[in-house]
Image (cartoon, rainbow, N blue to C red; front, side, top):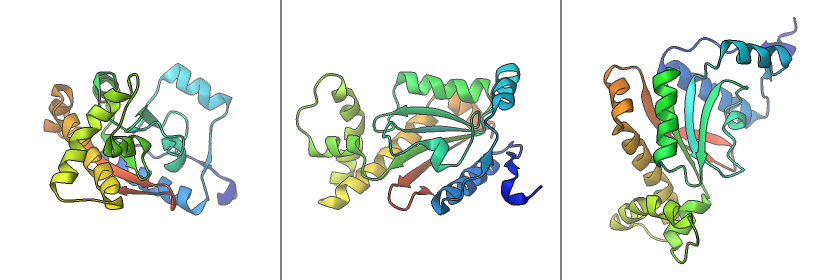
Length: 206
């Protein structure tokens, strides 16, 4: 079969390093605009239905429509366990979803994926009224804002720094989960931060 038209077969993944390698490779394909040909037909869907899911990475990311994990990592159906909310924050339901993925699906890598030009971060930095439950999102991002301000960051640089600090804060919070802690101690999971840049399409691991 012509390699060009060959269907991509995902390698078996056991370690966090192997999982990260697949994400980095997939992102490179996305950047170059040369995605792999993936098996998403009826046979694959039936296989996932009958045999269950075996995703190789958890991705906690923002709900922003410009940040679709399966696309920017060039992965197929059944490959990623994705949790999304505005600002890629950690709240009880998101945490429970990630704990389930690590505990029951034995996923070796959890990625907290923020991005540049994040609207939730901008709202937290700019302040002002946050109607309805939007305030709950802003409240979770505020510690990152305070940390960046305490470091003397200002102007346009402040938004980028808060995006970075927010990613680091969520990674630290995840590591405090009793469930995640247990798997971290056993070397069975790695929690990593990463940032997606909208223009070039690049994901940079922190």
